[in-house]
Amino acid sequence: MKLRLFLIAIPLIIAQIGAQETKGPYEVFPPANPPYFRIRYEAGVKPQQLKFAVKYTIWIPPNVKTLRGIVVHQHGCGIGSCKSGLTGAYDLHWQALARKHDCALMAPSYEQPKDTDCQLWCDPRNGSGSRFQQALVDLGKKSDHLELSRIPWALWGHSGGGHWAGGMLMLHPEKVAAVWLRSGVPYLKESLDRPSIKPHKIPEAALTVPIMCNLGTKEGVTVKTGRFSRVWPANEVFFDTLSKKNGQIAYAVDPLTSHECGNQRYLAIPWFDSCLDLRLPRAPNTQLVKITSKNSGSFRHQIDGRNIWLPSPRIKKMWLAYIKNTAIPDQTPPPLPTDLRVNGTTLTWTATADLESGLAHFIIFRDDKPIATIPDEPLTRFGRPLFQGLQYSDTPQQPLSKMIFIDPQPTPGTQHKYRVIAVNTVGLKSQ
Image (cartoon, rainbow, N blue to C red; front, side, top):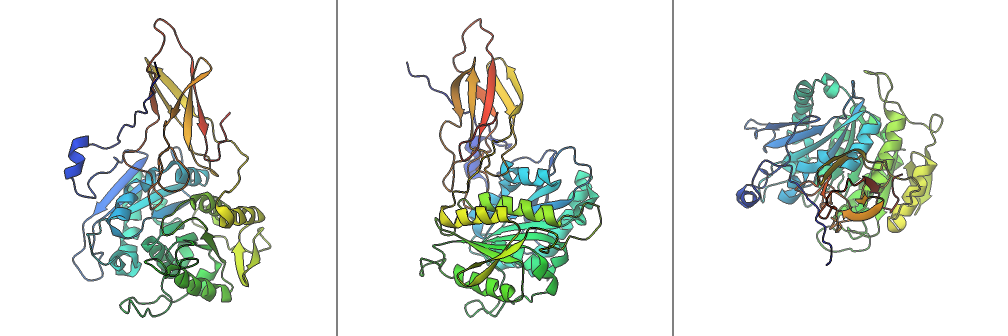
């Protein structure tokens, strides 16, 4: 008889499965129990207020007394992308980055109605910038981390989220440690097709902030027509403008994708890691460190006649691998799973993701023999298979996968010995 093993994916939501179909698009989301915290604001009614309701969910690494910064993972436009923001703070891979630097991880979710103008939130001057700063104050009170409103920001944004992250850089460069713009950049000049959008001015301080422009090759690089064909021209204007002013900026073209995020996290997270190493101050309430070639390994690299700024030779190697085929190499194994508990035939454990290559799956051993892979089928539609799956806007799938396994065929009367091994996305196994 063929042994069949089942992954028990327990939803971390308070709702019956059958009832989910009747709920609104923003009413199904994971709970926010410590170390997670959430706050929701209704849509504003006054001028200059944000016109949409919004949830902010934040994860704070356990046992961190004083946070040094906050990593913001900002989704793109439309209901699908806005829904995906509901799980952004639960991403184990992005948590690994935040944990290493004693940072919080925040994921907003704007409740954008269907067929409404995305600029009403992705331009931070339309109320989303002030609402974000208000959320930092209020979440600081809820989490007993009042420093949330004072610490620096590392901003990642996809599509409209790129507009938002870049806009926040232009408005508050002194607060931004680094910014990654996936398939979206702020407008720097009047747009012929969007005359209602007010262009941003470039403050001098923004030129000292590390910036990465990242897009898919099918967004106007190799595919010149279609919905996303104007992404590359917008990136060219943004990159060339800041590069000519000696800004610390680079671009990375994903050779495999269009507007979806694909494998960008395997460059984005190490890039942020290097930038935060260089920029975050060691002492609280001090200014961000300005990166120079004298106090870091940063340098400029020529490609296609353009100067690409990169924070280190290590990141250059990863960047070259990414723009070739996104297959960034990794020789370090993932962290060992911990806190394995056996209750009857049910196993539970905890694990942190590999900073470089994330977390693909687990292998379950019984009496030193492998009996299951969790999940037994890859959870992905975009990019490499991940334990948590991956949505269009680079966030985990719902319901969130849980680290649990039920042994379907233990030997009666035998006290089995179990162990769990983590495997990252390049196939390396934990010790």
